[in-house]
Amino acid sequence: MDVAVFSSKSYDRQFLGAAAAGKHRLRFLDPRLSAETAILAKGAGAVCAFVNDQVDAAVLAEFQRLGIGLVALRSAGFNNVDLDAARRCGIVVARVPGYSPDAVAEHTVAMILALNRNIHRAWVRVREGNFSLDGLLGFNLRGRVVGVVGTGQIGAAVIRIMLGFGCRIVAHDPQPDPALAGLGVRYLALPEVLAAADILTLHCPLTPETRHLIDAAAIARMRKGVMLLNTSRGAIIDTAAAIAGLKDGSIGHLGLDVYEEEAALFFEDRSDRMIPDDIFARLLTFPNVLITGHQGFFTTEALTAIAATTLANIATFEATGHALHEVPGSRA
Image (cartoon, rainbow, N blue to C red):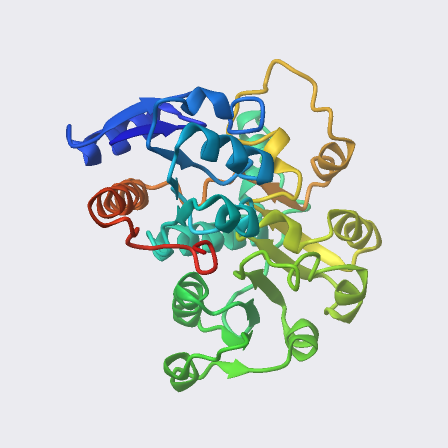
């Protein structure tokens, strides 16, 4: 099958190319998928899209006109896809439901450690010959309360790591995991988790219900000086509310691997240009904020698994008309 791969980077070519192994013809395209670039998929039977590609009604209508039957997401999230339009157009949408929970979980914990012990600030100081410890004071993790919102595979992996540090865990999830409860995790209502946590980490999908789940009201319920982490989807946090929380000290540390307007910034080298996003630029002025560019998934193991599952979705669709991991609700 001919597959148009949008938002392609060198690592996509490496890992997807190895997984395809000549069984499919992959056409790697640098541009992001949008209504303007969808025509580039002409001649393909399937499209491979990434987290910030726009798979909206206009794009799907163009794919229908081009005879494309499958959108294979090389990601777990699918909030960038108009599933109603996919059903109307008869286009199957598939995803990678679980590629490497450990990759994102370990990145989350790395951010916790870096923020707590001010590793990012110390690195800059030492490079400039400044060995002062003023302003770098951290705290022991043992005995601290870690709140985990979303205890799927990634949240569960974070919990197991933090238990190893001697932390106490409270969690919120619509479907509590009995195995985690057996490890001592206390499942509570969200307001109770917000109020109890010294460290709060978010691992839930972006849905209409979770959009701006962490807003001004939620921040007001949190412990003063809470450490807040988001390695899931950017729009789960109301960024303006987070900035207000940083300014008044309600949030003591903020770690973000995602950002609600990241599509205009992430995955590109913009070092030779001014950042046009004033809200993002404001975040960068806080010394207690650590931002990475959606790299939590970025390990050899995760990319290998993403490529293998993506190609398995494509191969199964070509053989049967059904993808291995179809997004629920995408098929008529």
